[in-house]
Length: 107
Image (cartoon, rainbow, N blue to C red; front, side):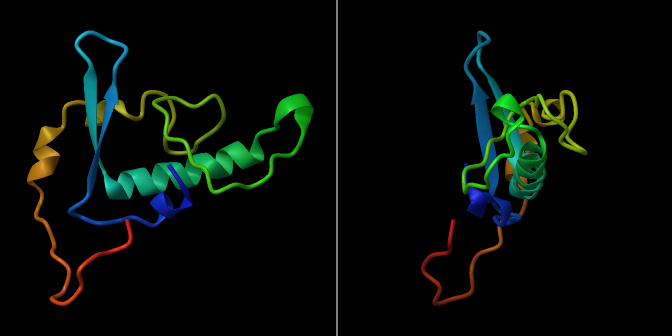
């Protein structure tokens, strides 16, 4: 993911993350608002944690969304992703269409 995913907060946008390790695979359906929050907080936690040999990490546009983090991600500790497992009901949320004349939005 990238820095732009911190800003993508659309009630009609959900992400489906697929864990291919178990058999059968597991799907997590996560609202964009939650993804935006976790990638922002996780990135700040990553920056605050020491890098290799205790070095200070440099900021990048790259973002990671993980089921568990090995550094502090306040509000997304432990198995934070579990409540979104098989949450297909979130796909039934109302979709807000862009105003007429707008053909595309930044994604």
